[in-house]
Image (cartoon, rainbow, N blue to C red; front, top):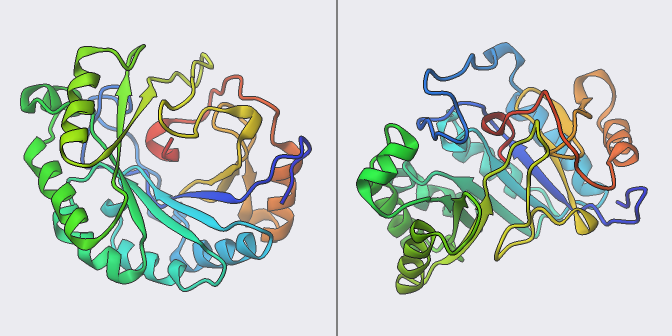
Amino acid sequence: MLDNFNRKINYLRISVTDRCNLRCTYCMPEEGIDSISHKDVLSFEEIIEFTKVAVSLGVNKVRFTGGEPLARKGCVELVQMIASINGIEDLSMTTNGTMLDKYAMQLKDAGLNRVNISLDSIDPAKYKSITRCGELEDVFRGIEAARQAGLLPIKINCVIKESPNEAEAQNVKRWGEENGLEVRFIEEMDIEKGQFGVVHGGEGGDCANCNRLRLTSNGFILPCLFSDISINIREMDYKTALSKALEQKPACGLHGSSNKFYSIGG
């Protein structure tokens, strides 16, 4: 699939839920959120059929996001069903890692290739402060479970305020290097103000080469993270919805007033 700026769109990020077991300060208010009603959340059947159409049009890379994807009941089964679609070459998941100790081997057996794990500090007290409720040891156990399961390479997503040279970021980097993990730094973003930057050590944030579309858990395609453009896949056939998303994908993100990180997976 090509958009109007001749960018090859081959990457679909699927937010399977807006729910999360953490309350990270830069992502979610301390009191939590009004979650999307269960009746409005895409069924597994809808996600699978939409993904099949997207793959038939050229998508070959799929990532599960949230919220926290493993907070959705049956997520492993969904992974297995998506993995069975011919044409997907890279199937991954972004997770906070706290539940990987339980699910890593099941995910690998279901067909997941690899994981990105969010980790902003290797200090237990600082980690709990950032997440408001998380236990760092849960993440460490999840990382080891992912390693043992073969969900490789394991990439660590570390949010930074301004620079990868920040002390906490460098601590995560050194720890990652010591443990054979790829660490990427993601600048803290503000969708409404249009503040974003490239992912240090990754591909995100480079508008000129953006290759992705996002599917929200309540059934909207977002051509761009920093835009209010959205297409409801329940109001038209999936091929038409994807075509509209390509036509409306902007050259560069500016700002958006309706999107929230906890519901679109970044």
